[in-house]
Length: 145
Image 1 (tube, rainbow, N blue to C red):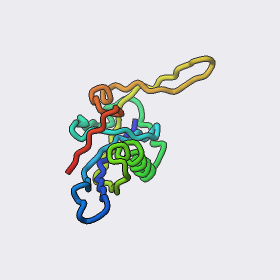
Image 2: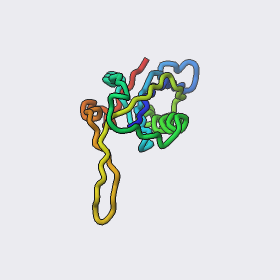
Image 3: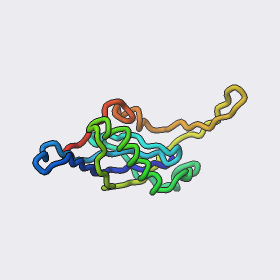
Image 4: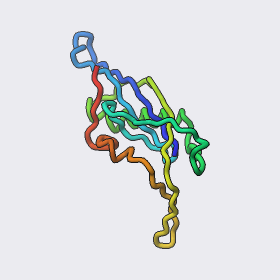
């Protein structure tokens, strides 16, 4: 399953030059699911625990992206502005992309039948979301500079 890890710099200027005490800047990270097209917060204090593997040693195939990298970046910026930083600062800061890294998660593809309809679901082989308590959680920690 394709994912992209992105780190963004944010900067919030709050008016007059004398009020620099209230200006904020820092970093925030998101992990974007390139298959389901959604972003979720990733705590910069945690480690992604990525491992490099030879794709020839894996059984199965890679699932292609459902969106482009530019769409993922733009949707991540919108998510950061609307869901995270606006709740913390009650304003919308300037956001710039600092770093991006593609990675894949190994999963089993399942077909689930319910009430006469079939749904495609994935069961991941890793514990990526269970190990990180802050992924998509209510507490968003920011790295303030």
